[in-house]
Amino acid sequence: MVVADESGVEQDLLWWNGGQEEIPDAGTKIDVAYSLRANTYRGEKQLALRYQELRIVEEKPIDVRKPKVELRDLRLQPSTINLNPSILIWAEGDDKSKGVNRFDLRPADEFAIYTSPPSPAELRAALGVVEPKIVYLIALPPAAERVDEFLSRLAGMAKFAINKRKGNISIHEFSTAAAQREVTIRLGLEWLAAGGHIQIKNETDEVTLSKGDGVTNSYLQRELYLAVKGLLEETAAYRNYLSHADIESIFKF
Image (cartoon, rainbow, N blue to C red; front, top):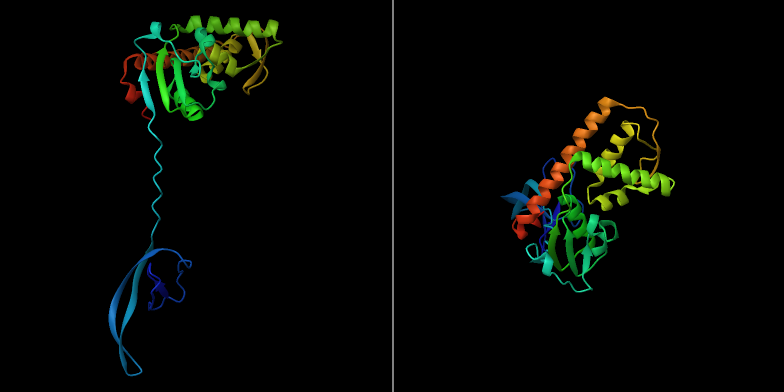
């Protein structure tokens, strides 16, 4: 086998019984273990390199560091906030008029998080879309809802969609109006369906709702109720964390 160093200097490498072995492709960077042996060929003394083992050298990936995002903490002064109109503001729930929801975000240099995100996943996704240089953290938490209050409000939204929009609505709309996770909305709608209040014709983001048949699956309703309760409690706990945690720790993913 012929090997070459980084300067292009070539050297024969004796590989005894290596005829059937698999060798690396030409140009592959390798480390070679070899031994030196004195050899006499046609009366001339020379050194021979004898192959022992090799390993392919993995090229170290280039470490491309993203520029550090500047964080500005405005959590303790929401009543005195006066943001520049050029700043992209993320707001949902009762504060939706203050900005845009998570599905209408766009790239921007300055990004204000007005409403507390319902979970770290939504926060990560938003930052991935916006890719801001400066983040203003306001994080006003929506009013905490008990599971019965949430399900009652969801039922009202579903009724409105059925009566005014022929049942056509998206999970996105529900989640931003309620400032909750999409999974919480889906399970809440399934709870309504299990109670015979509504029927869900589609399982994609764009759902079509219609009036229920009145048939109740009590066991399924109970299981879904507990699942929704757990999700609401997780969101409430995360929002409580956002209200007092060190701002640097919030953005460490």
